[in-house]
Image 1 (spheres, helix red, strand yellow):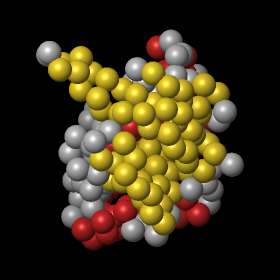
Image 2 (tube, rainbow, N blue to C red):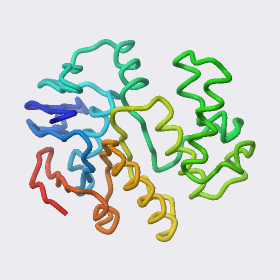
Image 3 (cartoon, rainbow, N blue to C red):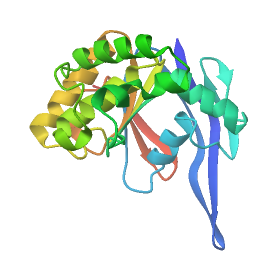
Length: 226
């Protein structure tokens, strides 16, 4: 069963005299519980696809279905609620808040959801243990290695029990050994049932996914199974 579906998605940016067709009629779907890698050269449309998948941007035309709900035309408040409740994000640059401890960074989505402080603290401790950071709860990002910071980001992405995790170059700022550790963690989460869609330009990282979707010139060029 599909968790997300694109139906003839176009995204056009008006930049100067010539409009830029970032997505040029993309129709594709991602199954619940699957693990996908989106690949392609710079300018192929993969980042635009990720932004629309994450409800960070809207298509110019076409329909985007998330859990069979058309979210293409929702207003900003509704999109923000969808992001909070349905989608977990992992970024190349970690996007942690430097003033907050590991525990408070993990708790952040729960704060916005209005969780009780005790309940959210317990959830954060549980997730920190899940990613191997139970002894680092009171550390701040500046006191962590790159791999540890990405583990915090993974734990934070899971805080609200999202239906899908979007990972944008999740190993881009990590050495190969640490990157493989993060990918093994994501593969474990996927084996437990979490749907993961990531953007990567590295073939060895894409090999962790079940399927690879290759973008070119704003279109899906091909889909491969690993």
